[in-house]
Picture 1 (tube, one colour):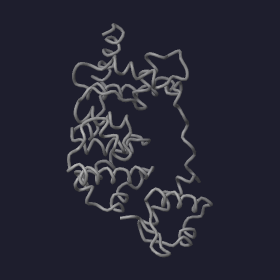
Picture 2 (picture 1 turned 135 degrees about the vertical axis):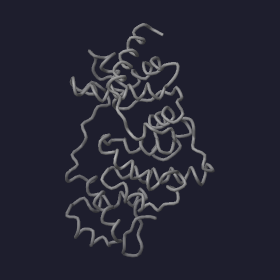
Picture 3 (picture 1 turned 30 degrees about the vertical axis):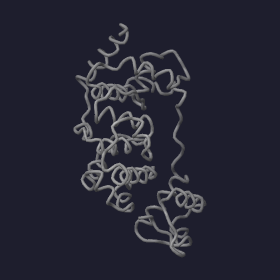
Picture 4 (picture 1 turned 180 degrees about the vertical axis):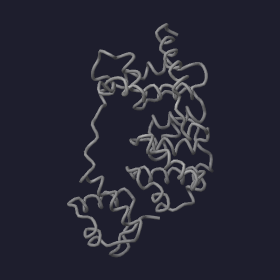
Length: 267
């Protein structure tokens, strides 16, 4: 291992020793629970996830319970986290594990990416945290760390440039805690310097939520969680020019079905 990598590892571990964060999903190696946390953490701040994660796991403690629930039941618990498409993916993933994989959770990145909503990086996180395997993945905090430490004078840094460094820095053992350490250091960086991710080729400012189609999608789902409604009733309750477009998206994506003139959540 190159000397600079050893120095880098020591810096990360030293920080982690005194600044380790504690989250409920770090106290389990159950792949299902870790999958739930990783899907929740996609595009959502950690502080908003903790309470929802605990409620979700309490109601759906394992894959079998999730697969046995209706989509409205799962969506009801998800309310408040946003990006509701993740709920549908999570429910479908649970169904596949139980109905197609015999209840056996995948143990490698490639198999995990065959589940809905599980990309390469989410799959890598699940493998690292559940099985402690030396896989390579990147997420926002990890990206910050490597840009800050190895690309300080660069701009438009691509993940392809970072991934070999992540590979090279993997320790011989305890992969799980190495990634936790990277994430905690990465979460700390914006508090002490300009966010290094601004130098990433993949950096993008999140689009405005207020008045967006995304906001209307959430409102439609919230209304239909209460009762099936007609299109005209939806338009009366949600004053937005985006109702038709949002509704068409939700129907096409499998959230909503028509029953005569009524619109309802798929069960």
